[in-house]
Amino acid sequence: MINASIIPTHPANTDASQRSLNLSLDIGSAMYKDINCIQILPLNHPSKVDRALKALSVDGDSIPELITEAIPTYSTFLTKFADLDSPFKLLDWLLATDDPAASSSADLMKEMPSHLFVLETLELFSKTKLLSASISDLSFLQDVLLSMPLLHSRTYSVASSLLTPSECHNKLDLMLKRIPNGRFSSVFLNDHSANSSSSEPARLQYRIVDSVSGPRLRDLNTKNDKPLVVVATGAGFGPINCLLQARITAAHRRTESEGPIDQTTSLFLVFHHTDVPLAQPILDEASSLGLIDEVHIVESNAEKKRVQDLLVREDVAEMLKESLLQGEGGWASVCENEQAAMGVRAAFEQVLGSEGVDETFHGERYLKEVFSS
Image (cartoon, rainbow, N blue to C red; front, side):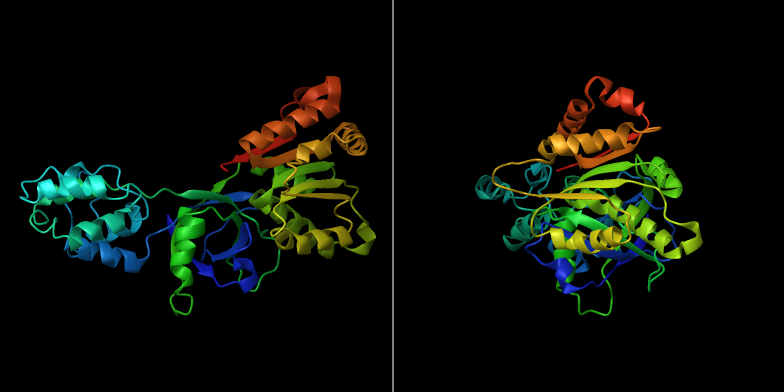
């Protein structure tokens, strides 16, 4: 993985009331393609690493004896490998010691909250002096480190197009859902927001990977001559934002002599009401250029009205059949969680009737990206 830094954005993008947020990264000299994904490894904040080193009474530059081919320093292990903001996988290491205070450890284990994170647990036992007698034992330290949960990368859709001019040519945009206590969307971003005035930007590690439907959507966007029906929820709008950016740029570059492209693009979007402003500017621009002929936004509601209910409404169903069945047939792109994606497919099945999804799209023109809720 390689390093990236967060580009400070307008305060409106970090409004705590929003369920989703737009985020820009400076990815240096790395390259990506439209409709790619980015896997982000949210490193532990340096201040938390320092606290963990202090609790363990170890030098960050020294090397722990771990069973691994590439042995990192304590500082590297606690920065890139251990998840300091999740609970220990096991606490057996507290009892696997000759520490005379082991019985006290057992009592404290019974009383301590089960949700305490690694860093909180280390500091708790450090303050009670229960680690002091065993901390010099390398095998004990190894047990402590190997009982820590590991950091995992998180995958997000790239929301920006390479075709769009930018002041920062190495900028990559994301649209991500705020998840309570989410390792990246909550913990990492909150850790670094307090340090936003620092001259050193927040850093993370990442790699670029392709999305499941990336190759086919890029091909479709290049030809731009087939009807496209898109169903997306919340942060699932990211790849559609990328697609629209590319089409807007192409429209601005197109000469009058070439004339408009014969295309039909219909969007069915689901947003929390606080997230609509994140998508509205690009929807307005694309609509003004004639790049979208239908936009339906379903806001989260207490009545549980869903986008699939809209898809089967008589007037909408007729439009869908016209778009998807005319000529060589249109395309459909669905980007939602698994349960919603199943509901959307069932709605398409109802609309298409005897043709069905498989028969209509021949397994090629029905693109599905599923993300975790």
